[in-house]
Amino acid sequence: MIGQKISHYKILEKLDEGGMGVVYKAEDTTLKRQVALKFLPKYLMQNPEAQKRFVKEAQAAAALNHPNICTIYEIDKIDKQSFISMEYLDGQTLQKKIKTGPMNLDNTTKIAIQVAHGLSEAHDKGIIHRDIKSANIMVTLKGDAKIMDFGLARFLAVATKLTKEGTTLGTAGYMSPEQTTGNKVDRRTDIWSLGIVIYEMLTGVLPFRADYEAAIIYSILHEQPEPATVLRPEIPTEFNQILQKALAKEPDERYQHVDDMLVELRSLQRKLEAGATKEKEKLVPSIAVLPFVNMNRDEENEFFSDGITEDIITSLAKLEGLRV
Image 1 (cartoon, rainbow, N blue to C red):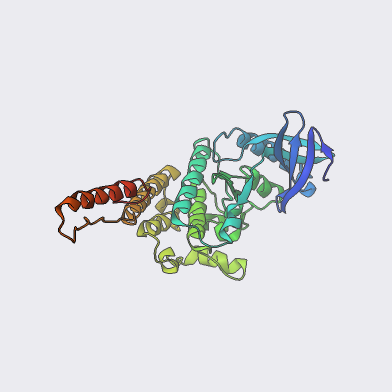
Image 2: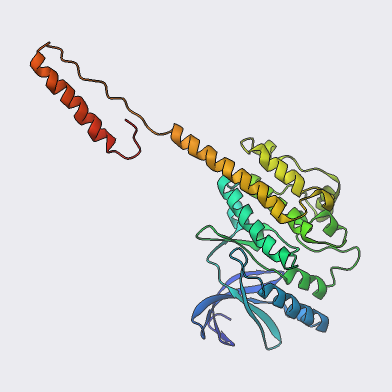
């Protein structure tokens, strides 16, 4: 596939492969820009109903225009294989970043706010992601978070008939209780999954974890997660409060709109920024210049003593980051 030309795209390199298909980096030879092409598995497109769903979901996702959502440019088909052309993002998934260890509090809050902004835009347009997880969030080299795969989760459900009663959709550890039981989902499912991602950023692990899927689902339905502050004591209690509300078992007890969650995340961000400013002020190096004393009691040398003191103070004051 590398080096081949598909439609007006030249395939440059393979980026990723998973249940949703294969992703390649490509060059749009018409518009002279780099894009990402996602080729969907052929078996998913054999069902005519699935093909219709794919087009419908892709059209809805393509209507989303937001800095924190990966932009979809077009959908196309070649040799009976459908693909999506989307914004190429230079960076790495949030999942890969977390694998190096828990993230600092500032970055956690920043990314959570950005993802919440993207979800707010989608929810206001009636679009639910249904599969929010760290692997579906790209963090660019500039530190911006972008939600990927909008629309594909629901398409995959239809294509593989996973939304029938008693079946589930989504990566188990991120699923809401209503997803695990195959019940109807709404925007509050995305809020739950964002809560899972925030917990993962803070601690490096998922709140509901076990060796096999059935045990994870049982935990999601019946158990309370270990507070993030137990795993990481320096975490502000406000994070625990946000997580407790986002991860309420009953949808009616969660944030009813992601904007409500945003209010509390922004408040926490301001608190963290204020704390960082105070800490920085505390750590500013300081020095006191004591007056030189004329030890020989010669009154003519008093002038030199005062002058040397003033010269030293003036010179030290020019040093950035030093308080005199």
